[in-house]
Length: 273
Image 1 (tube, rainbow, N blue to C red):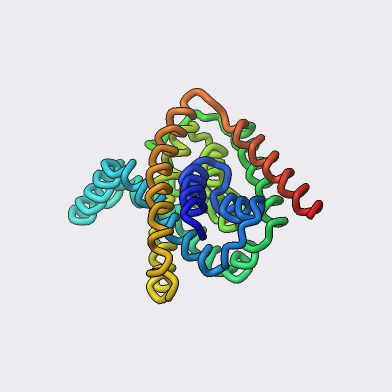
Image 2: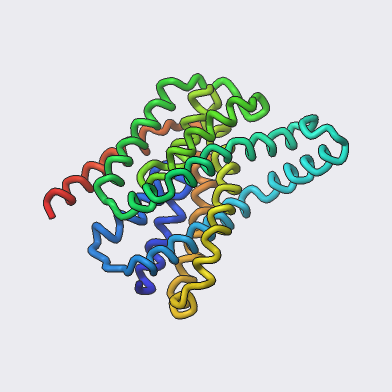
């Protein structure tokens, strides 16, 4: 991997982790489109690092919310009233929403890993993301906010996030769709999606930490990886801010069209080559 490749992929990861267009699909497809021959182990290490970088980006953006949630959860436990405070209740709902994806990911780990080397499957799953975003706009009434969220809503959103373990299915797109099909407004659905990404990304980073620490390539590749890491974190932060503002007045149809077009172009490239 070159320095230019690292920075470009960092930008792509930062943009697509939170925009509903699937970061995993783009990390698979961009090297494929450009003909980059990046060794599998190098690509894996880089993907883990830039995902951790976007974790820092979302934590940086929501740090005030996170402190308020953690403080309320702790005080609720001490008072033996864990759900009395709305912020504490939101914290428990976020934790509940992460469970389906964790279980699903562990059950089909081998299938997921195989999918990440399959450009054809990734393109088809991008069509799936487009369909999900259209469903969100067609079904959602957008009459509720986070204060009205229930445990069943959290599980429902978590089930949608679970299908995003495959490359091409956008994690944010799937979880936002889950929220909007239960009538959350767009900004509330997106906010819950971003917050619930934190425990999932943190758990994935911890699980991959052993692989990073034991890799003989890591020290050698760090000078190349670090610019991509920084770029992914900064761009991820800016992407969250932009999307939350965008969704106040706009729909998800633009992103649905984007996923449809990218998936179709990838299929054309796949069959032509």
